[in-house]
Amino acid sequence: MELEADLELGEALAAGHVRALAGLYDRYGQLAYSVALRVLGDPGRAEDVVQDAFLKLWHSADRFDARRGSLRSWVVTAVRNRSIDYLRGRNAHERREREIPLDAEARGEGSDPWSEVATAMERQIVREALTCLPPEQRQAVELAYFAGYSHREIAEMIRVPVSTVKGRMRLALEKMHSYLQGRGLPL
Amino acid sequence: MTAEWDRLDHDRMEEAVAAYLLDALEEEERAQLGAHIEGCPSCRALMWRLSRAVNGLSISVDDVRPPERLRERIMAAAAVPPPGQDAVGQTAPHIIALPVATTPEPPLVETHRVRRSRPRAVAYGAAAAVIAAGIAALAGLAVNLNNQLHHAMQPPSVYALQGTNGMAAASGKVTVFKDQGVAVVSLNGLPQLASSQVYELWVIEPNKRPVSAGVFTPDRFGSYTVKVDRDLKIGTTIAVTQEDGPQGATQPTQRSELTGTVTS
Image 1 (cartoon, each protein chain N blue to C red):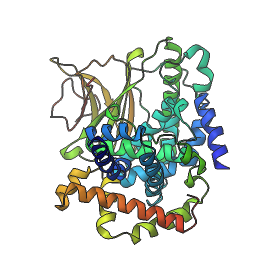
Image 2: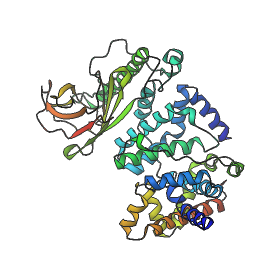
Image 3: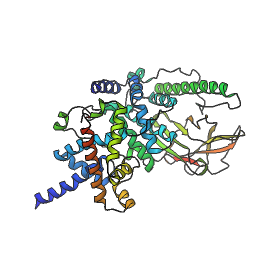
Image 4: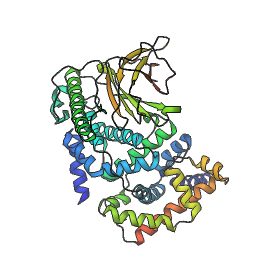
């Protein structure tokens, strides 16, 4: 259902309807700001980053493809990436956005799993999933995602081989995936 | 031998998919993995699966309501048409539904100003009115920009201003609309001033003396947005200093602790 809403909103955005931008913000602005604030820890900078991200999305709305992911992940990825760019002192144009490639098998799995679940329940379940991770795996994931450290930087920081950091990241995401799937989230 | 090398390469790449999704790879490794994933269904499937967990990370954060003004800021900024779009044919969808200022903007447009000498309730009411007027002015700016647009547009460029020392908590950005020869400077987290002082914005072109772009007082949130009617060339520095009010100074009297440079 939300996939249809995403498609509709995405089309309106691509058509340049400013009300669609307002709708996008009303739907995901709070989450976007929460993510930026979590990464940056500064309300003013979080505002700047959210504004930049929404303008970027507005100006490139025709590139949104609902088959690659939900509007929510599109917004959150943009906000998170810009927040990290800000932390690293990197211009946004230096970044090459990660795109999840289309895959026939993957498309068959259905829409983005996060689109049909209430946010509060999702948050609780995701937090449980994080809590269940071994501390070193959770640390690797959070240092990368929320603090913007590379795997090499993390390896130097905690004095383990780079391969160990990569392995911890993979194990963490695999376990999270399994946990979330086991809790009935539509993965 | 080749098959063995391919397998080792695949294993190495596969192990890095999680780091790729977490944006934790160096650029070269990132590019290699990106190319590998294009041709590797197995890694694509793994990436697709793990991406659900990564998406979940974002919703694990505490839910914080953004300031009301953020929505207005975004809508005002979005009123400038997307790059490359025909302003004539697409004007209507991009003009926001806000009151439009009927008077031309001065070189420096105030968007937020609080008269702190008034009682709080009155001051907040006045502030809200001034903010609304400021937003209207920004909308007016956007409409004016729309009207000035030509068919071939360049995307706006955004540069960061970073604070240090006494202004370490301050930040800002400069959005340069090259085609229009104007820029919008948005500042946040500015420390409150002594009543006798004002902030002054400076435009410093390479090897030239600073030129004042005007004085201002931020709102109670330490925020302020100004339009600068100048074509900011590469190498130009935007700086903010605290000066004696109400007129400010003809040249900076102190080292700026909030600066940013137009780099390219």
